[in-house]
Length: 401
Ligand SMILES: Nc1ncnc2c1ncn2[C@@H]1O[C@H](COP(=O)(O)OP(=O)(O)OP(=O)(O)O)[C@@H](O)[C@H]1O
Ligand SMILES: [Mg+2]
Image (cartoon, rainbow, N blue to C red):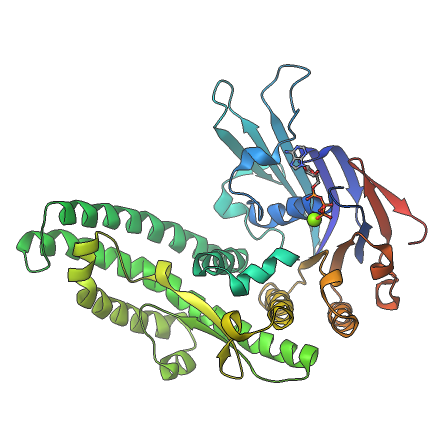
């Protein structure tokens, strides 16, 4: 699929922008703070409806939006995507509610029709790769879970629904545990049993769907990432694993390859783990097992990359992971995603820059690649991609880089 048009209004440093994109993509050069990352942030938002850079959406609205007319601050992103022989128009508008400066209202339309977030995610598939993504390896499990969730949501709408239900139940179960813990109720009491049994069953029903889907996706991603890592680094030893608080044996992970077969096993393990954790949970007033406690690990030759890998190795693992995600999207959606490389070439040595660019060219993707230094984008493999320069909130085509 291709993004063919992008329109921004009052988004970050862009007051008004209208951009036509070539199916090959765009090579974008610009100084620091010229708006490169903001442009990619807007495109990624069309794919997931959320910003990759902030959870506070009011930051996205241009600081002076609405000022001259005394209107509530407002921002809009509009994209036109071609997907096979279909054209999809995605529009996201955010507005600060009059009189409530802390409240942001978001509206989404697909082909002019208002839709919920759940129905908008996945209209565009995009993979963004930026220097901060090294955090996926070195950062917290919560960041990895968020990223995994956002990736799977683009591929599978029912996943976002399971995840939303699970999160609601988790919240309710946690507040029950907190109040039981506060009144000194222990695991043996009848009161604890009666109230918790219901929530345990709900937690397991929705949590096991989330875990099983994640296990299956990580298994496929792990295989694709290992192949790509081998091409990039000439070594074949990357192992990506889903580590669940609801323990699964390697044999279970290897043998159960469909949701129908895996989910009941996850549910059974989940129930056992909850029973074992009950007295701890009542003491601490929180749910201690479930998808919200799980993690994804990356190992090279059996050693955890987050602890033992060099920065360069961690970066290469992220490159392999991003390429794997884009290959998986292509497999599942039967359409290539839009790949965005934000300022990542400057962080790789020349050999790895070349392998990354060759890998993207071979996959025939629409590639949007940014750099502060034009020479990084002056490459034979990138020649067919039009070049532009961004400065002062506008993007102007360049005849040559
Ligand atoms: N809501 C906003 N309104 C106006 N300007 C904003 C807003 N949010 C961010 N900016 C500004 O937008 C500018 C562009 O930021 P962006 O991160 O897109 O630049 P960049 O080209 O990626 O820079 P770098 O090369 O340093 O990564 C920054 O100067 C930032 O302060
Ligand atoms: Mg940037």
